[in-house]
Image 1 (tube, rainbow, N blue to C red):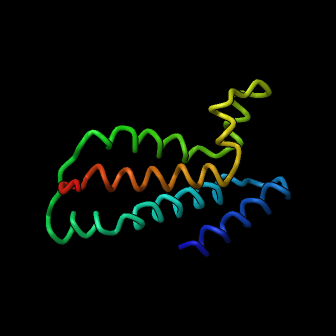
Image 2: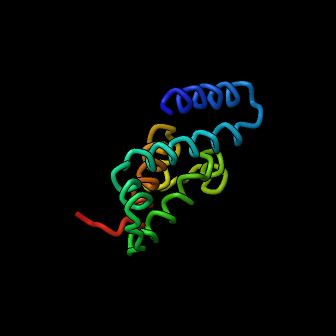
Image 3: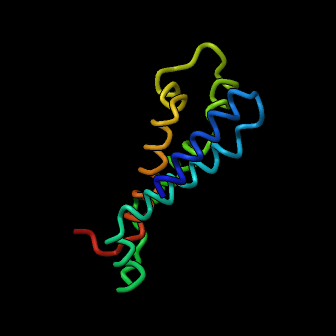
Length: 118
């Protein structure tokens, strides 16, 4: 999974340097990071699927919002906010920060469906 994320980052950087369409590699990178975040909390996945402890709690709202925000490619943040980028939006311009936030949204999504909260 980490290899796929790294190769996709390289693919996105190459597309940005060549001035081609980097949206597809950036979306793939976000998808791999989201899946990595989901698989990181494997105990909760085991609890949900094997033991049947499925219950939705309040974490589903922030996890879905964070996933939506972090799946937006970084060139759109620059396009929407142009030169006057606020500090809280500036964090989405770095690929590493965007990957971390996307993985965090995957972890939060799994925890929002876990019925056994320890």
